[in-house]
Image (cartoon, rainbow, N blue to C red):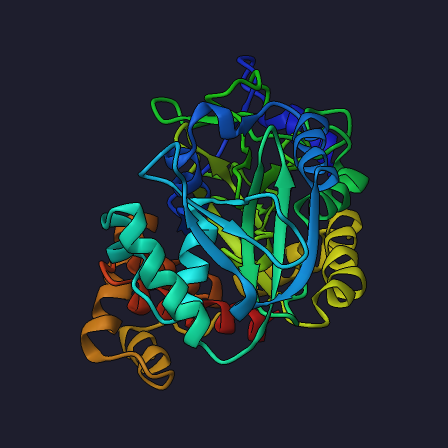
Length: 398
């Protein structure tokens, strides 16, 4: 069955298809971004996002200076504001909240404490730290936007990957991100019907394209082309679609990274449901970060975008067909031999019985039971451990 035929077969006439989100993992990373972003950090297309982050790069410059040569001033016009004068320039530079924290960290001063002091007193403390600090080079990122602001203070070997470079890499596979290619902002799951609707207007409330003064985050899916990977207990197709998210900070607030996966649905508050085959890579902004991005991260994104789903589908099929337990004794032995405790074993078997209406028999059954138990774990480390063990089982079956 082709992907288009699957969509037609699963179509309910209301603009979507039935999904079973009781399987796989739930991932809340995109939801956290969605909840925290104000309107001015939300973009309706990749072209608008690119124009914004590219524009600030064009207004910025970076240079390396001696930290001990930085002069701190308390503005006479505003007693609450500190300014900096950098070597080689007479014009004052206003530190952002983020770069002030980086500068304070550089000299070992608590930024939160300095922010509470009157500007003249904070100036004395920060200047003393910079002057007494052993001479060390730092890399600055300054932007001209009505006034000159200091956006970042990093080590001299900081390997900056600009936010617009990541957005451009995504544009090469996703166009504008609004459906002009197969990659787009996701649709929405209707919890009352279990129907996932991939065709939803992109608004500031539904978009998953974000940028602030210190980072970017993008999430796109291929949800108009669902893939059938077996059947559900009621005989209906078990449908997945591909998705990925990526992030970066050109000012040192976080690494560059991207994650690719298959999923079954995205709900209104942008939680990812029924996630399988999750893979993530991160790149620290070290000296060779730009090279790694060009030769590792960007090609990996393109490979995933253009890859065939057959390995994933065949892996799921193999896991479904590999029967490993036919009795209660077999079921307990299978899990206990793989390091699960007695309590975990009982919980996994009980969960499958409750959700599937029968005890686990195949590797896929056990994987679904393990990930379902993981979703209920209150502590992230315990949840990630279970999910990793489930993925290991699935990979071995494939």
